[in-house]
Each structure stands twice: as C-alpha cells, then as structure tokens.
Amino acid sequence: MSIFEYNGSALVSMVGKNCFAIASDRRLGVQLQTIATDFQRISKIHDRVFLGLSGLATDAQTLYQRLVFRHKLYQVREERDMKPVTFANLVSALLYEKRFGPYFCQPVIAGLGDEDKPFICTMDSIGAKELAKDFVVAGTASESLYGACESMFKEDMEPEELFETVSQALLSSVDRDCLSGWGGHVYVVTPTEVKERILKGRMD
Image 1 (cartoon, one colour):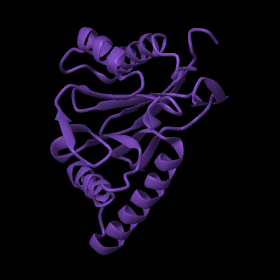
Image 2 (image 1 turned 135 degrees about the vertical axis):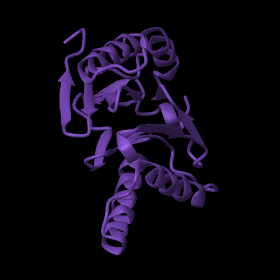
Image 3 (image 1 turned 90 degrees about the vertical axis):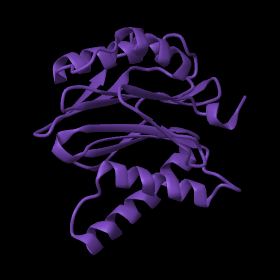
C-alpha cells in the first residue's frame, strides 16, 4: 500500500457559472481500519479560496498550518487576500521546496478570481500543477471520481445544480473505494455566499 493511501481520501472540485464546489469524504482510516468518521479535509483560506488536502493526514495538517502562516504574512504585508492563482503558486513553491523529502499530500485548490471567474487546480506531492476548466479530483477514489465527473459534468451549472452534481459524483465514487467514504462534506461558493453541507453516506 502506498503512503498516499494509508489514511484513504476522496476530493473533488467542480466549476459552475460564477461559482465552484469543493467536496471530500469524511473517513479517516489506518489502512482498512476506520478511526474517525468526521475528518475535515477541506479548509477555508479566506471567503473566496478553499484548500483540500488528500494523502497522509499528518502531513496534510502540517502543510495546512504552514500555508495559513504564509497567507497571514501575505495579508499583513499586502493588506489584501491572495488571489486563487497566487495561492496555487504558493502551494506549488512550498511543495517543491521539500521535493527531496516531500509532504505526502495531493492538494486541491479552488477559488473565485477576478470578475468572479472560478479557478480550480490540483498538484502532485512536489508541486507540479494540473489546471482544469471543469473539475479536478484527488485521493484514493480518484479513478472512480474521474468517471463519475466525466459523465455528470455540465457547463455553466447554477449553484444548486452544481451541489447536486458534485454530491452524487462523490457518493457514487466512494462506494467504489473501500479506503474512503462515510458521507461527504461539500462547500458551494458563490460571489455572495458560502454554503456548507454535510452528506450522509448511503450506508449510514
């Protein structure tokens, strides 16, 4: 078993019309043993940028703390919040800095940029970015997430339809992966509000 699969995870982010959704499962495991069913993989950096971290849970928590620290320094120096593209570059640089002893994480970054244009990207453990205009996935359930998102995604979805689509994609995908599951945690972000919802698993 890969160190990236040790705790299990499922992360997906999808864009809509001037909005985006980011969702994750809630299981924390040690290989096949479930430790917790309310684990938080998605964090708010500020109202328009969210970060999801799949991979080794301990590294994810360490990386998150370092990124929050860097973002607060930026706020103090620049007197504004980071744009999503800038934050993605920060994450990439921080990961590449540690390339000879990397954090075993695969981040997913989602945000609203200039003119409320959604931005999503993911990267590997040494910061190689993968940008997308529709959706990005990460974690042990990524293969089934790719299939579900490919078949369900439509362009210019409104927030409610986007929530329904990303939720169905996540729940159907974690059913096909024994290392992730136990419901989901979904954020739908528009220029005016952030909606957070907890999904029940199909087996709950």
